[in-house]
Figure (tube, rainbow, N blue to C red):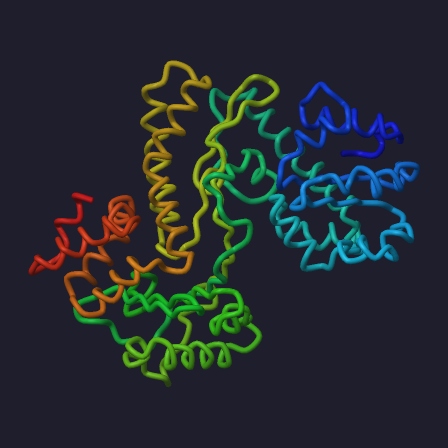
Length: 437
């Protein structure tokens, strides 16, 4: 509730609250009767409602259900009774609002889809003032939408395939499929010299509970014999130090730190390393990432009536823990291309059909990725234990990286995991059978 829109009388307050609750009777008893048992009441610009302070504290608030939460935002500090009354003092928490720190500003601007290269100028201009930051983000967001609207007027179809910058917020976030609001892993990975290849070539995945994951696999690049090593660090875990190190500041220290983590947490990888030859192949062959997994609407209707389609990271962005970003985007691009060839017009029906085609493939990939970011459930641990003991299970697990939609179906529930293990354990080689999941 906004204090600017409320008559500062009990009747005016109850009228405004009844509108929020979508009820017609504005009596105090009826409002309380319709208040949800765990409701949250937020009152902004409370300094305008000073005349209501005593009535709210003594009459209205005591009648709310015990599990209710009331947040009052004001430019003035709370009046004395909130702090001195014995009953209210125990229930009241006062949190002075301040300008945001630089790291908080950058996190907010990233969440709003503002390009990283614009952050320094915005911080210098706003000094971390929350309202100023919000206004700047709104303006930049509208600028991106205006550019898309101009293009939509000049072309039959506009496809947005970048999830960064002002265009990153063009398509609304779908909370149902976006369970995280911050990155679940801090990732650093690169191409390394000095790592002997497995024979046969293999994907090596090391799970370290409470710390994260270490991945290692051969890669074809500008020179032969390179190996990818990547650390996926849980915040506060042992891998976070190397995930936050800047390689350019001290290359030798970075490589020594990575080598030490492999010695402690991934001895099977460390055993294949020649320490004196262990180096990054090129400075450009190292990548840092911290990705918030997000699913957005697959299309949007502009004010002009034209439609734009989301593709790649603009639509679905996943953590790289199972390496499906490029695969998913490639599939989506192919599906969109086929739909374009068949289309008579690019209207909402076309956009909805494309969204459904793409989501049919990307949903299990997204759910499988998010499932691996959470602490593993007992049936997943059972699969991992079996993989360390039986090569066919390990092969089937690795095969799942190529077919995540089938593999997640086998790992999503205890029942499916049990069937998966029973079937794989009967194989002499793996894993043709997995296509049935």
